[in-house]
Length: 289
Ligand code: AMP
Image (cartoon, rainbow, N blue to C red; front, side):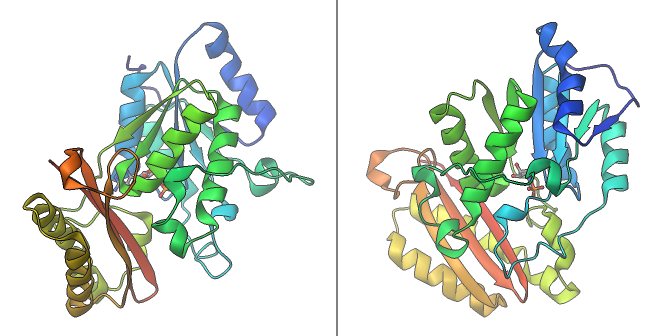
């Protein structure tokens, strides 16, 4: 159900104001979809919003750069922020409500509880960003409790996060449906990301090779090539192409992220993370069996 296009965009910054803004919708038994973001919105986020608009009567977009999912040496301070630009984009889409808490509204004095992410959080990102999924699981659980949506949209771009959040919503009986959205890419295959803004011209030219190499791995997996051999060859190739470090290239079961086995005849996923100078890129592609 699409809502009427409107330029009436309300921004709330406290949980009390958020509750007041959504109470009428809930009492009227109208459906709410949440789109969690860290802002610096691009076409990937816009597609998440469009999916949410299709699914529900009302859409809430959250904008919060969550400090607990960044490690001490990561890019929290320089993470791109453009609230005015974001609000204008959301206004044009007809979004009614933006939930933009500051750090104190999200983590008030005395905050001390954490949610532990489930089995899907093992390995991959966690091997390199051990703090990440704890931060994500806790903030996502808070967002779900704050907004109490019927739906929430998440991008396949952050594939492990999508599976972790789907597991969290089910395991903790959050009472909402997670709607996955396909990865939106530049014409040359580079997945859109707020962090692409960090890339120099030379790095930007190398960046699409991550997607290219993941696709080659996916095709070779389907053709029956040995996975350990493919991973090693793909890492070498990325380094040769100009990536400065490869965190991982892995092939996993698409639904559970357990190790992939072609004989199981279940969809797989090739996931990768690699560095171009100070910028870390992640991407993933489907293995269609
Ligand atoms: P972020 O603001 O980077 O935390 O991302 C917020 C949401 O947008 C997450 O669910 C991401 O997976 C999703 N997202 C980010 N980039 C893309 C993309 N290129 N295509 C689809 N979804 C994306």
